[in-house]
Length: 76
Image 1 (cartoon, helix red, strand yellow):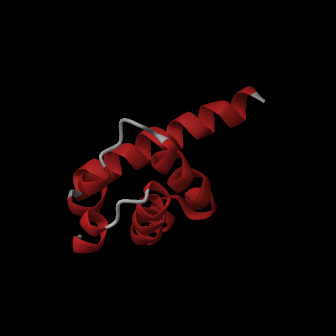
Image 2 (cartoon, rainbow, N blue to C red):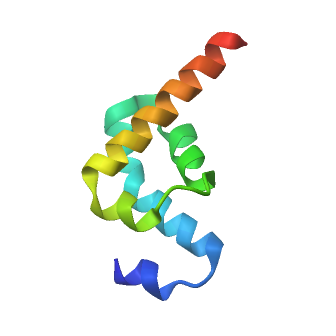
């Protein structure tokens, strides 16, 4: 967590958060993990600190992104 607070560059922050949460997302969503991780990192209302510290928050956001992605794929 100290690493996130120390990083002022937005790209580095996203990279750190993405690398940290990816494994958890992969366990939950399989091959959709890369897309879902990217969706969460691009969402301006997602709290990066909570993604790293609050598993319920992470699970909620992953579920939201998963269903959004599923709906978008169904529409295509």
